[in-house]
Structures are given as structure tokens and as C-alpha cells.
Image 1 (cartoon, rainbow, N blue to C red):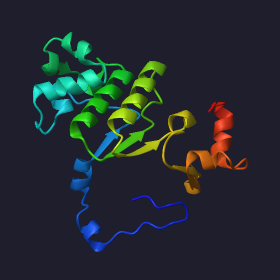
Image 2: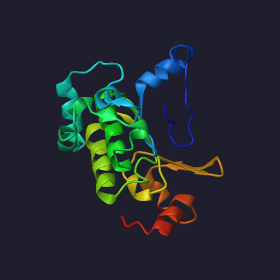
Image 3: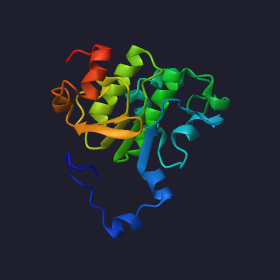
Amino acid sequence: RMPEPGGQILIDDQDIQDLSLPIYRLRISLIPQDPILFTGPLRLNLDPGKEFEDVQIWNALEAVQLKSLIQEQNGKLYCKISEGGTSFSVGEKQLLCLARALLEKNKVIILDEATANVDFATDRLIQETIRSRFRSCTVITIAHRVDTILDYDRVLVFEEGRVVEFDKPKMLLKNDAGKFIELRRLQQVSI
């Protein structure tokens, strides 16, 4: 739970007992900056727990605009992934991670510089999908691109490993001496 600016996070003992590392891993979807695909069939990369029907996987691929690309692959959902997923571009791997997150339907999504190494069109697709498909989720985004987080509920700004600002983006943009507005100026992001 995120506190209000200047507030505290309250966690009771039951919350702590229920949160083990395996449970965290099952309940959080991660879309990393450097996505990795494992050697083996694509379907296993998207559904390692074998929980979903093919139609659900195709729907997720369609939502991230990869359905036609996968349909062209030899074996389709069962196409062989080479070590590290080298047969796919960084953007395609990011979109495959996004498709996996859509399937998992977790309430917490972490984007770790997820659009740092992709082209503008893929960046836009990822951002639109996050905004439309994960509306009822907690989305934690680690980002240097200010424009990707301007419509977020809260922004936490770090400098040298310390929190220097935490508030709504609009409030942070009113602080002419703040780090967030400094980043905005450096990136020349228009609102």
C-alpha cells in the first residue's frame, strides 16, 4: 500500500505472514527492460503453469498485436524459442511479456524501464495497453521518461538512492525547484 504524501504504510502481522517470496512471484507481473525468453516452445514462455487455453493465449497475443506474427511462425504457439529469444526483437519480447501479464491478471504490475529499448510505436502500444487493460491494478513503473508517467496517480522521485519527492505529477510540476520538473525540462516534455 502506498501512503499519502507524508503518510505511513500500515501493515499488520497477518499481511506479513501471507507474503512469502513464492506468493510474491505468483501475484506480481514483471515487464523488465531486458526481457528474456526461455529456450523451448513459445506457449510455455507465455503460460509456464499450463493454466490457460489456447484461445486465451491467442486473445492476449492479439491484444498486444503479435497474433499475426506468431501465426506465421512454424509451429505457431509451439514455435521453438532459441536461447534468449534471439529470433524476436526487443520490442517483440517486451510485448510477449505484456501478453503474459495480460494472461496472469495479477493486481500488481511492475514495469522496469519496459519501454527504454523499444521504438516509438511499441512504446505507445505498451503504454496504451497498460492504461486500458490494467486500470484496476497497481502499476509500479520505474522510468526515466517523464512522459510515460504524467498521468499516474503518484510519482516517487529518487536521487542517489534516496526519496526526494513524492506526490501527484501535477503537484510535482508546480515545484519549480523540484527534481521532477528538472527531469521534465531536460526532456522537454510538453503537457
